[in-house]
Image (tube, rainbow, N blue to C red; front, side):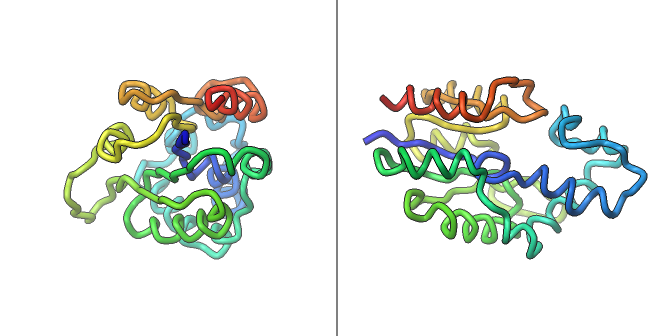
Length: 194
């Protein structure tokens, strides 16, 4: 049975859009950027702030009641309902340790019928001292030793998956320059699994 490895943030959910529109812009009314203009990730330079200020805001949102109530991306949930029973699924995310439990709870609440395995690569944060077992998702994929296809919004994670021997699909987001639709990306995933 084939195994799909799913990124969580900005693939299973729209956390960056929701963070920007629900948390950042209301607190920074002078900021005139919209989601489609987030051509870099992380977007701190575009927002005119330093990386640490951006990460503090994003992490606070990740732990907020609003993030806990995030809806799954409708097209992705529809894909799972149609195709999810025909292969295995793993969630693989990069987040700071303190936000990983919230992500796992969200994944299992919305996708637990299909996703039975959750793994995270700790994103570095000031004051966080953890064993350096994996630097990135490529390292995690090699260690896990499972998976046929990675679906992610990060071009570097997609390239790493390919170096690790997996096929990969890039879910289009403003920061990765992919202009195709979500439907086309999910159709490509379906084609790779046949």
